[in-house]
Length: 257
Image (cartoon, rainbow, N blue to C red; front, side, top):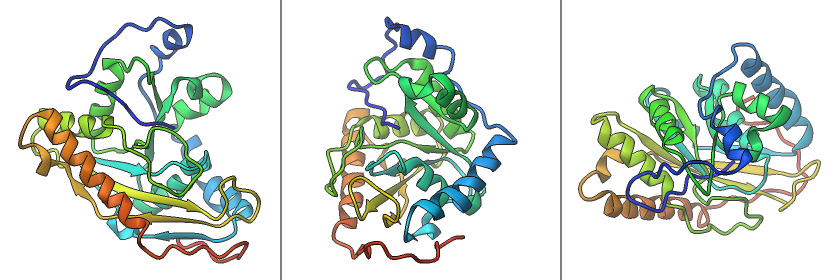
């Protein structure tokens, strides 16, 4: 799972030149399987996560909008993050399926088959296409909950790493092209008791207050994106100053089970 990282004020539409990019041209849209999605949410929340992890602590779920376009902006620490996010903010909590933006390689083979039917879609980090950007905007326009990891990759420490500007540019582009859309960005901190989770590892997810994207459409896209990225950074940094102690190997009831 990754972040969108555009380096110009407007999305670029470079033609794909690699075999992987050619394959992805056909899977830049996504869908929710009416039978697979509920099954995977059930298995993840009631079987896989309770069995593998010790304590799973989720705070701030009241900050998750029940309706309207939302971008979840979590820190990225392991590949477990996506499953934990679905558990903490997905259909069992908000009644909504999460729509993950993933890399090209994650949309290939058997894994790709599942990703595409669980609402995920791909983006080429080196050459983000206008098709992917348009699909993201359409999802937001439809009031979906989109997940983009703003750090741009997995980091095994507990430090916040510089955020990529793509998430702010995408949100501002969608809000500006559809005034009154009301996009909200939700900062989320994910913290594990071990950098490489093993059986019994404890984890906490802290969900912060919503950032209203409409408040940042005052100047040029570049300036607005810089200000929005800065405020999202500060929102995520606040988590590091809050108490998030995770007791090692302690088993407890999962918050929203």
